[in-house]
Length: 82
Image: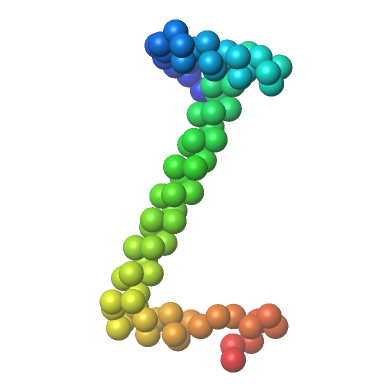
């Protein structure tokens, strides 16, 4: 389990979040943990996508990298190279 985090919320924001948590039948802390976990997952996915874009851009601009990927190719379903 992680360490506790203290967060100060404006009253109207806290009320809104408490209402949303209550509608889901969970406490505010549980709701905030779920929101934080979803956001962390989104941030990780975006970082991976950004890294993939950087690799693709590098390959597009680098003859050596392009040759490497052409040599590797896409594997055939039977494991044999075309």
